[in-house]
Length: 279
Image 1 (cartoon, helix red, strand yellow):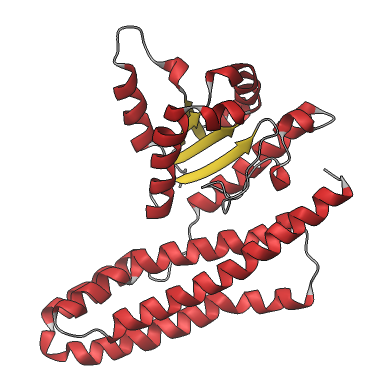
Image 2 (tube, helix red, strand yellow):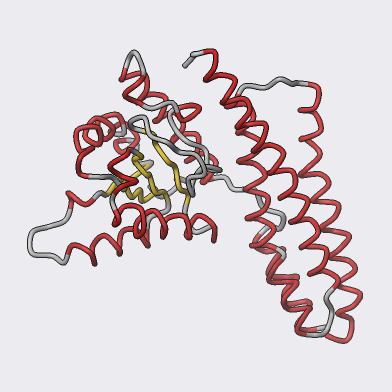
């Protein structure tokens, strides 16, 4: 089955239009392959309401690129409106936000600091010796993100999720037994999903891009947990049964704990690479 092309919103400061144009040229192959359909505010037709058009595309995009520079961070609209809403959609799992660092700027404690930044390690495009190589690195990162988006991790297959929800509705008198079954099922699948992380303990030190793979994987697990088990937990909670909800929250805390460890590893690896001056 062919995946539908991903709607991609590109947020940028107008001062960076020349870099935007270069990026769009490098994204052309992804568009010809019908993997993405890009939109940015220069695509607004004459006579249309600008803010409404931007909001419409920002709300419908599956991927949102933030073209980061001092001008972007200084723009109230880019920062407070576009970026803030983009990060909200990332948090809810409705969109994937990718910051692309165009020019050197202080990013310490930026709201998007825990997201994977492109080019690799967030090294600004204008600082690369060969700018085309920088844009190729960006496109490669976007292509990898598209592949992950089109093949998300799931705890429950769609039919399995539907059948379990129906089972709770039809057999309320046996809901407690179903809850225990789902708890065991979730624990087994979570253990299996998390087991691969232990193999990384013998591979240190890792490069930043190697560390980001488990970060993206864990983020996918968290999204799958919310999508697949939160609805079941809510159904059971309505019947006064809260153990599955507690198990879901406990596994979510485990995922958050692992994410924090890998984020620290990632930031340390980026700092180490920056000190060596390698790109």
